[in-house]
Image (cartoon, rainbow, N blue to C red; front, side):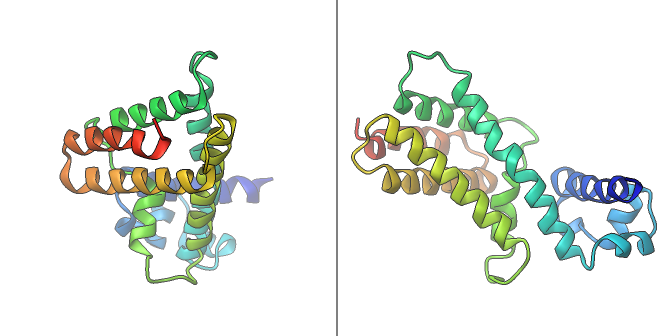
Length: 188
């Protein structure tokens, strides 16, 4: 049990560093310091910083997916799937426009490791993207969309592009442009 608690402290410390500082600040020494543990203790639980990063992302995946599900399920039942997806985009646009928003951890990390297909972080990032696309496709199937898988992929591309554009430009016009593009994908 103690070993599991120590491992969780390291994972939590790494997540705090990634979300509050940046991925570039993630080092074994910094994680150990934030967790209040020794470097030696770090290596009792993880072989490398990369292994820790992959586990942080794997732990983050369910929360990432759950946020979107909660946003969708919290909407009035009379809204159809297309309206729920539109509202999801509105909420994303609202969230990314908030001061202090640093971007989606999965998008930031995928940009950092784009050329490293074999990196341990690649798997959880790709799985999170796949999970999100599958969820969107299910929503679109319920709405009887003609091409739910294709539209889900287009929506994922639109969301990821919006997140990157907002990280670079910090301009609400990108959110407005993404919302304006939705009818083209959703067939409205």
